[in-house]
Image (cartoon, rainbow, N blue to C red; front, side, top):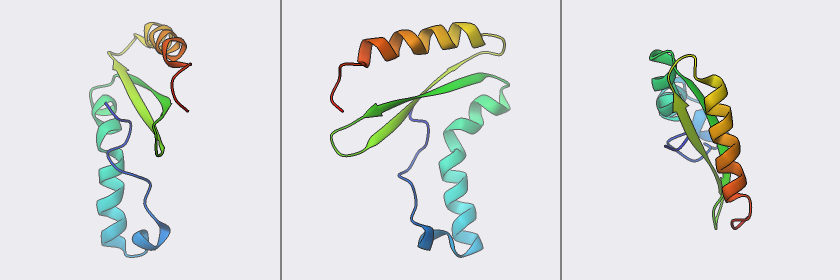
Amino acid sequence: MPTVACKAPKFADLVQDADYDRINLLCLRNTTLANVLDGCSISLPFWGETFPIGIMLTMVNGADERLLDSAQELESIFANRVR
């Protein structure tokens, strides 16, 4: 899943507290799931045609080493993709 559910907001969009709270919750929505379930996650950067994105890999608690190994393998597979 994508690491964040939105593009990075502009500072001007965060001035009002209500707007900041709404955008902050949106940005943290995907990462919060693993935290609440006590899992582990890593974000891998990928470069699309217009802007970079982060793809989040998540595993259960205690699977940190397996997660890092999987991330490294995926990184090597996609290393030669469009940047």
